[in-house]
Image (cartoon, rainbow, N blue to C red):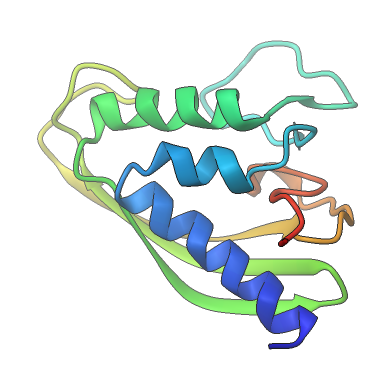
Length: 144
């Protein structure tokens, strides 16, 4: 498998781990030095230009928090585009707002969101993708 395909496989593994709440896999592949440069629309706090730490611990806590309000969250990777060490995943997330935690009140309504999420992957590049992305810089540890 060439580097582009390896990088795409790593990002696909990441989203598959999110779907099954496999935090051990997320922690093993998520880069400890990752930075979040994209506050969510509901986050109105001051956001530093260098981003905030978004390593394995923050990833686990974030997905647990989201799932507390959306326990059936599922992310489908619809397309992956790779160039050099950058991967853009076009993802479709679906869930039902039934839990009491997370950013959105429980309405019982289902929702779907389709968005591109860009990240450097296995070799440590960086990306600047605006507010729709979750990370900038290396998302995953280099493959061994």
